[in-house]
Image (tube, rainbow, N blue to C red; front, side, top):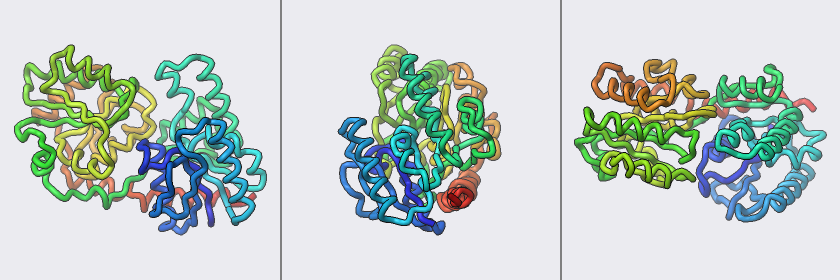
Amino acid sequence: MKVLQIGTDWFPERPGGLARMFYGGMRFLPGAGVTVRGLAIAQRPDLEVPNLSIFAPPEVSLGRRWWGLGRSVSQILSSESIDLVASHFALYTLPILPLLSRTPLVVHFHGPWALESQAEGASGGVIALKRWLEGQVYRRARGLIVLSEAFRSVLHEGYGVPTERIHVVPGGVDVSRFVPAVSPLQARRQLGWPEDRYCLLSVRRLTQRMGLESLIRAIALLRPTLPLIRLYIAGTGPQRSVLEALTQELDLQDHVRLLGFVPDADLPLVYRAAHLSVMPSLAWEGFGLSVVESLAVGTPVLVTAVGGMPEIIRPLSPQLIVPDSEPETLARAIAQIYQGTCPLPEPATCETYVRNHYDWSVIAAQWRDIYRLYLTP
């Protein structure tokens, strides 16, 4: 079986959950017996993934991206024996639909684009246009792969896709990258983090729906009784200045640190250094890859009951799911964990759980099996 994978940005150049999933598929599907060709937006070829082609550089307009995508897909379909096309974003699927009359299409649904834009305050016209575009693509796809049961419901109820066409496969992580090489204390020493602090970590894109303002306000509530708590926030995004201002307003400069962009190679050490990861999402957290990455190094995760995150945590440690992202709720849960009244799973238990359920060898095989369902023209 030969599958053409169509992504967005190429992960080593631009981080992001969707890009990371596409990158993982390109690397691990061959091990599951799938021959892959890939198309992505990138500056330069990746010598480690020779079967990837670039359909446009990131700085060009949408029109030029669509033109490059159409040309690349047309050339590949006419010159290679492609059994199925798997696309990861509706925006880069719509323009190639006329080319797929004889080739099955499976869409990887990484999130409701229109509804996510609505949560970030986009205008009604923009939301309506994105929703129309998504609908055109989802109706055309033979099958759709979602990251969680929560997103299965979104796709069915919000876009009218029949449930029999929707398949749930969680996100994957390369467990071999996250095998702990040092102890948590050694990790804190290597990073220059204080050894006497209780370190919380949140690896997030800095946007409103990620709930980071609530988490910072929770730290302010905790400071009088738990002065040794320190929160590290890793990531970039449009809310950085808002979070910096809030940290100063609450006089938390000694308790909250914004790390900015953390290279992918350094993430395992950062996760390992934390006592606890926190994911305080407000909305549309379809999976929560950072949850799995943190667990992979043995660091437990406190999550809000949003999207697919409870589906990850519930089988492992249901007490680490809080009902909402209100500062008081987060502060209460963190205090209970710090004081030991809320038990945490052992690091080895976290690591084994991820290895058995979320390693890319497991996820790639599930993608393969779903692709096979739609091979017939």
